[in-house]
Length: 314
Image (cartoon, rainbow, N blue to C red; front, side, top):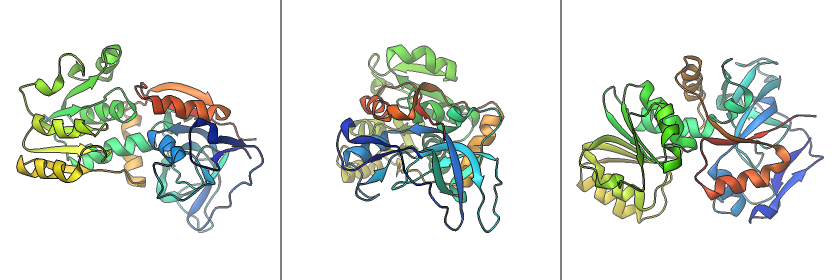
């Protein structure tokens, strides 16, 4: 089978298309999935660059998001059957940028009929991050004011829809070129993060979701009411001790979140999609052999929605 891997950490040049890789053999609790599409996330280029080392040393497969079809069920007889369309999360050293992957059933959910495979592949990591931030950590409630930074991005555009589905009043930030896109997503107010300065606003929010981190997280504290909740899904940049101390002093609940694969949460995302309340936006769909280009595009930032790789198993 074909698979994307790296044999050393580095720039786009280390990304390799391996043509004759063995089809993985599922272990206990795993199913074999024929991959139809794989989403591209910022974590993928950070793994390529060596910024994320906890997944091991090269050689490593790349890719976390997967959507495809079950071709081999678990030996124990689990939740899925051959022929089921599924989406979920694959963790390196295997990686989802491949024609076949072995995936734990606990990291998968059934793909709703309303989503094409490429759309389903755009949903797992960004969708889980947005869901676990807003519903799990922030416990967003009907009528609350929610600020979503980078609202046109992979996490942000899904977070807007999730917050709206929970009855929140949503303000989203993005560049000038993405203002109409934010309004189409359903934000109550679209704000150009350059002008006017969102951090100069006088009103206060109940919840802020920050996928940017750095100084952005620190400045977001001043936009929250006492008792408000800031969810930082990057956890990098400014001194983290200082950020935590500022949050505590201001009476703000700070959560530094890294998503976790969870079948129930994936199922909740599928339910929202089936209800018409959640739709991933595909910024670009590229073939598997252009994985290096896809990673570089995500690394440059400012992409609208998600970049996805189309995979055709041989």
